[in-house]
Amino acid sequence: MRETVRAELEQEFARRRAENERVEAGRRREIAEGYPEIEALIRKREQLVFGTMRKILSRRAEEEDLPERMRELSQEIRRKLVESGLPENYLEPVCRCARCGDTGYVGEPVREMCGCMKEAMQALVRKENGLEVNERESFETFDASILSEELLPGDRISQKQLMLIIRKRCEDWANTYPAGRIRNLLLTGPSGLGKTFLMRSIARRLGERGIDVLLLSAYRMFQTARSAYMTNDEEPEALVGPEVLMIDDLGSEPLMQNVTVEQLFLVVNRRMELGKATVMSTNLQLNEFKQRYTERVASRMTDVVHSCVLTLKGPDLRDRERQA
Ligand SMILES: [Zn+2]
Image 1 (cartoon, helix red, strand yellow):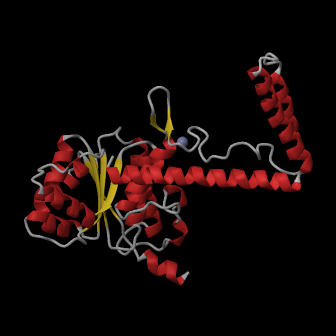
Image 2 (cartoon, rainbow, N blue to C red):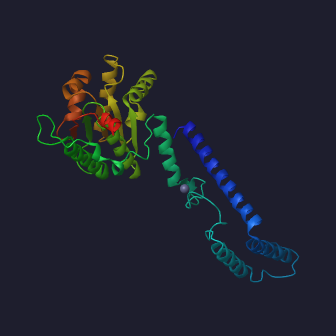
Image 3 (cartoon, helix red, strand yellow):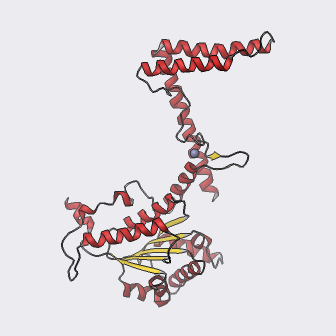
């Protein structure tokens, strides 16, 4: 993990803990000011603890039945809270993640990152890549109702039927990867048909399954490849490392003849050698794709054994959304 990401994560979790403390203090104040009966019980519980401690320190008493009496008092406090229309855990420590208490780490003696921090880290990385996967974009929120039911020109199915088939292929793939022989997906079709939505849905599902996925725009992908190239890094770890690399909107990046194509080929080829998956989306038609990135790249992304090409067709969905 990069140092900047680590620092930002630590900050984010410190913010979460500070927010928890603020909420706890607010609730404590609310009780002290508005619920004298409960407040009295809390004080009693405090005195019980301090009183017993004093006795123990001055050796005037054994620990007595402190735990039992504490439990009784706590139970009474919870009962009073509920009677007052508040949740029974209203005065317990507040945290978003019960597993780690918002520290971000779990495990003794080997400390490892809690799931909530891993999730925050993935979100941060996605944000850095300029492709934040937001709540609205997932297979679950996919809305087929905006799709046309008219038959596609020269086709026997409608845009809606086609999209539902493609969506299912994508979802099945994201659910079962790395099982199955298909390593590469190539989503093609004019802009505004939902390719980016599908890309983000795939990335989201893979992420939920704990698979190391990197989704980035073609522009960022070539930036990364170029800076690796500058430092004589033949094999850019950032692009070869992830189990699934997803490149959105290929064809939109500025083409530097030879360099761009060569970099893309090196990445795709190396990933295939390692048995890792590459998913791409492009506005280009297949023959244009071949022309721009050469046969070498195209053949790897379209080879029938390891790859699957999914072509979206139909009217621009953004126009429909605007009309609706
Ligand atoms: Zn956690």
